[in-house]
Length: 116
Image (cartoon, rainbow, N blue to C red):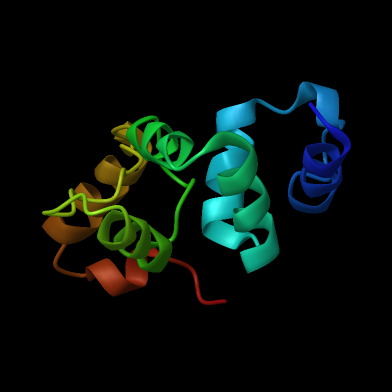
């Protein structure tokens, strides 16, 4: 990783050392949160193809909806696929609480949660 990329990594992935940052993760961070200068550094150093590869490898949380749509438009990747989403694991605790509250007419669902 050259010094320019290390500086970008320190700026956008401050919780890791630049050596620990995966290149494509860094590219995705630049695409989502970087400045135009950071995008230019990636494009000039590695070409436009890295942006396509980064999009293909996107994981939930890598992109905002706005940047996801923007990059698909800019790169001519139409139609834009749905933004990667996290799958919420089923929670037996929550569902049983809701089930219990909804089956007890004296305790409506809204009352199942304590007041803040």
